[in-house]
Length: 500
Ligand code: BGC
Image (cartoon, rainbow, N blue to C red):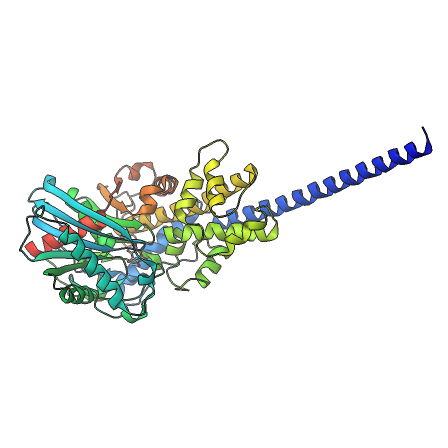
């Protein structure tokens, strides 16, 4: 071999060695980054852990807080609000009624016709629209209520001859999914906004009065006959179909529960008389808090950066508005500490860019290559994400949703415990778990997009409920889904309240 050839060959060897060295260095670096990611995931998973022992502590805390909230005004973070609903619809109601539902993401308008028997419930028309975001944060409530009145007017104009209530004053339920302090079934003031709404002028104002004013301004002959929390609407529909329904829960953009309570247990309102001896209590459980809740640094940051810090702590761990953002925060930290999502990962610094419906679609992606995950990431501007990273995404969604479902179940079991339907006889009966109370069938009505559309959330919740209550007691607890239950049930409530 000539000198030139030798020099050439050794240069090639040196070049090959340095390429190999670069590759090895890269591989080591990428392995190190992956290890960082795995550690972040592990730490997060541990932080979210909710074994049944911990859930039982949450159950107890929920039942104790319910007592405290019923004992005195401000006695607990649970407001335990009176609704003045004591007679739930029983199937004998007749007539045509309307409901306007202002929820967290959508508003709905519907008309129901009741024929005086349970089977004669006819939901004649339903409209569902997203709430324009400028209305949620406008400076004056007039803009919001004028918009609602306008939408209602259009709905009625479309009725033509379909409705048999032409020429008759229309009776309307206003399903208002926010905390209200009621003075009677048809009136109450807004306590505070939740779920990102921020029209500060409205806090303290009579909500039904605001809507009635807007309807009058448009010259509409519509009477706001009831102001109803969405949970109370859901309970009404549940009870109408099945009188064993005593609890209703909403898992949607926000979360909350209500239940039928004995009036003598509502100590903060002594002497409260109702014909039925009971009243529906709106718990506003989104604000529940207990040191037993598995809270992570991501939850703390989410809360601090929200429009309502130090408020609605439970809701921020279990409701649809927030699950996507918890996932986003975990991804953001991973992408800051490694570059597994590549250069376009800065999109994850945008609050709420990842919605819970995307979380559910990724979580439930059953294609072998996780194509749905790839599509959602691509829509966010993050392309060419390797399969292993896509699997990681699914895992993060799973951790967040599993915790949410399990905590939701603990919340429900807490209510069952308070009313003595958990097989233990409640927390004040002095009965031990061994001395089982005679079990009664108990129906829990559930409504809201998170529950209806996110199968894994639903499964985790139902599975944890059985774990907490045990197989035997669980047989008596029926969880029933109720699509549009809040709005339909509110209309039923107007009917029953006007008839009683
Ligand atoms: C509100 C509740 C409502 C729940 C579900 C919460 O943010 O405070 O009043 O029932 O969301 O919509």
